[in-house]
Image (cartoon, rainbow, N blue to C red):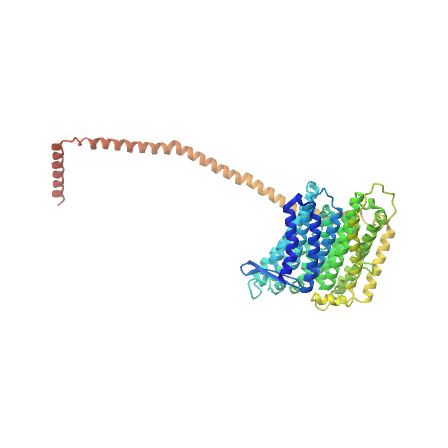
Length: 619
């Protein structure tokens, strides 16, 4: 059983590293290798989801490396590998042969493999390893076209923002170690054992996990980094924003639900942060004129529902939302990428009639957008109501906030659909979308329809049993009807409103279009003070430390010169005097050495005489 789990994580990681090491020599074979590995990983993930294997290997003294697959991680592993396979199918047909495909597909496999490590990790150290590799590979993928300074700058912004939030996991790990909860030295670092810590360590662990999760999932106030991530290739956006990195934070919160509940405050903070993100980033999505920016903001908003579910204890609804969103959002990003390649733009006004010009892509995009809008009978409509039932049981105000976010989902989805379906002039210069890039979109469109089934009994009850979730509230018929009616009303209103400007103050519209000014706020509150501190430290180094070093060096040189001029002369004079005295003594000592016996006899008599006198005087 453990071999199955090791193979699941090692196969994409090993193949990704191999493609990166071989480099351009493997460009031709890279798509085929990546597809074979992704298909194999999907088969392994499905098997693991049924068998629930676990694996353990020596790592640190008293702290082994532990991986495990349970209900939640099994569903996530299948989702990650399935979306990875579909995205790579699209990339194999769409990605130019002149690109560094070995590097691209290698990074994609490494990225997916690190996500598999993250979702199967049973302890914080293993989770951190997958978490770190995922962040590093996302930076490399967003900045894949590294010769463009804007893309590399965007990758840096995304990496540094998530990296700052990731420090929360180190805080959580340190607090867990300090708490010493558990019967063994490593049980305090087990994800299942975090909730057993005592105060104040429990609050530190909760705060660290929440901050890291909100940062990775681009929730408020970290949402702006997802806007920058749109600089990467569209397949990267499809994978990163649907089933991997951006949902990793939501997965972590769903996984650590007992910790949030035990803290006494974490569940409320998480639930209301998710609700606020769903509403505010929904407004941001409505204000966008760029399709990928609209989809990015909608990703923040939709993941906000998963975060809300984690805070409300609606594990089943949050998981169903995560899986359904993965299918819809990956399809939307891939379709946007196909239009970008074919038409050379992702601006909504320039995409007029894009769905009419590419009918199959347009139909698939429509299915995903309607699902995102929460219209029946598609997957996100039902999944959202399952999680909102948990919100209603917790607080009517939380439920109302969730409904407001769902209303906005329909508005921005209808806005995107109106642009791509409106009649437009002919496009004689439009490129043809390869058939190999269309079939993955059709598969995802079918998934958007089929995934509505798990949201209803008896499949929903089976999902709850698989997730080992406590008693989950079930939505009533009126809840399904209310959300569907609101979605239809919002979509119809948005379609009828058309391209007319929103009835908002210019400053408000500019703020929403600029992602609430979050990036500028981060620069004012964090980046600028850090840079000022760095400049002050540099000035202190130049004006104080450097001058002190230079002054000590100059004093040392002057001391050396004085030593050379004064001390060395005295030492040389002393040594010369000793040498002269020694030579004089030597000359005096040679004088008695004549070689004549009678002189030696006289010297001996004189010496003995002196000795006798001394003895007489001493006595």
